Image (spheres, rainbow, N blue to C red):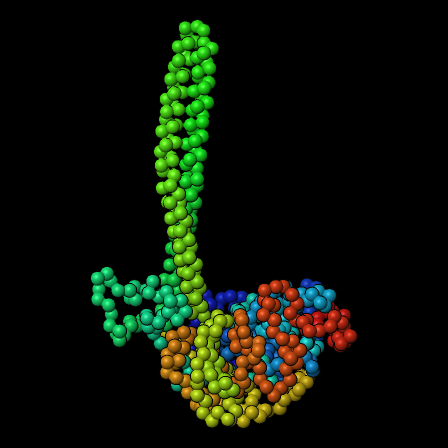
Length: 553
């Protein structure tokens, strides 16, 4: 087990993970399978749970194709291991770098007899996912990574959208690493805190606004710098944006209700006055008729009194109608102004909500990709592209391999972050490191994960030169769970809307993605994205499906 020296994380963070793992241990101890009996494992290799320490929040999953095993890592090492079944020949699960894009606990195929694919965690929009399934002891799926039912359920409860998933040919593991190129957090300048995303920093940050009557700041004057740790600064930004959005929403609601009330009153003004005059005229007409019909002195006196009251009411109604006709244009203008104010307030609310959303995104881990193929650096946050820029890779004609660096946690009271590195089983010259069993039928499955140490990962960093302005910009958003990927490869076509970077390693089979193409609409509708591109047939289904529920993936 890998062990990193790090400050203990809070009990509140570890508690849900510990509960999930304790629950998994209980399920394994009792031998409980899924209720329908459709996902019972056929592989006797047990699920392993770290026992030497409490488990932390999962940061990455590494799937070994050769070993047919998945290992889950937190900031201090591995916490869970389980056997898997990856893609069979022709439908291979491609080695590469992925992340969890979507989670669905109860996923069913709509092309294969409503086959159950429980605890699905999607890693490409074209149809590769982690999910519970049958485990014959060798690659047998059509691109997905099947896992034991109880393990898949526990992992589903532990993971978050965006968690890194690495599919490697051999069973590699992360190692701790230090290097000057690895980004370290730095204080956030107030003048650029959110301008690049929202343009609303001046509206919410007091240091960015000049006091009334104060002279304008000099053009070259440095902006104030937050003395707090970057995460605290980002939290204060998010709090300010959230408060502004809340206030804007209340203002918009009040303006909308006020405009509706004024408009309603303006619309009712003339009809109400005209109605009052009509009723007064009717009462006067009735009083005059009663007066004419009266014959006794008492009746005549009562009729005269009623007629006088009716005349007074009519006079009041006519005066009110004259006033209403004079006031109606003013009311109409006031209603128009109120509606415009409500429209402006609604626009401010939308802008404030967007700013708060983007501020929240700034707290999301940053993902940086450096491609030797394109000689460029790309940054994404919260599955959205932030920016890209040039980068220099020395000896650009020589392979550099694929390396994934992960920011594990803060150190020195938030002044630094601790990094790990995972190097795939390709050396810088592009050749395979160690044996590769194309079928993956169980060879070396109990072997411990290997690592070339930090030498290959450091060698890759040694060849990278990043412009200072880009370093500064990235350092302001770097936080635990952020990552840096350096690779010979370019971005896969799988990288796009609502994804992190998807990097597929060349030199190996890629049947699981070559058979299909990304569907940008897949995440907007409930359909079986697993089965796109395959005929509705069981003709190719091998015998490992057995008597259980049909599981095409």
